[in-house]
Length: 285
Image (cartoon, rainbow, N blue to C red; front, side, top):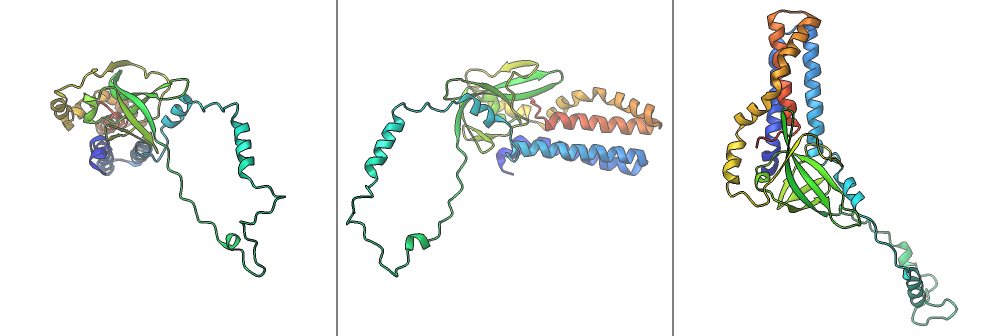
């Protein structure tokens, strides 16, 4: 994992490992029903995290290239293109009725080298790179804050704007409206690769949208050090744990158990809430 991936994906991966460690730490004290519930939670954490990381790294499509293809339309063919092409082809094609002395005839008994030469394998075509305009917005929806990129494609008759969620990177704090490269499941802005935290949307994300400043913030580097502290990020993501005691009460009501069952179920629910906020790309700014 390179430095850019560590900045963006290091925190959600660390929280995922911590959530799995919490489930493993409770297994010695769990009965059969609780062990089954812990196994289901652990499998859900592993599966959903793998899906999110595969989308971030480009192994799974995020839908951005499809959205950009909708904003571009193919060029209309020229009315005289077919006629010009036909006349060019007729001019360059020799008349079969007129013998051409410049082309030597094949000698009898000589093998045809052109027919016997095997075709060379062609190299795979590279994914085309598209240039788009991006603008960072911070979205606050209920207790979750996320970073989104407002992506506008270039070219074509229609300019379609899409919204792509990304994992937080400190460079987003100073990002103004810029040009970005999109290709092969990746998005690069000013030489920095940004990692999608979900699929693209054609409509604005729900909640309050806060735009980045139109000019670079000179104090962005200082703010980046403060907002990326792990303790701060955990405290912000822990806001969703207010529902964890209710999950513990529900477990005791359905499955029975005493105070230890309530504490264990509440701990697992709280850890899962923090993990879900982190793996969906929470924004600590």
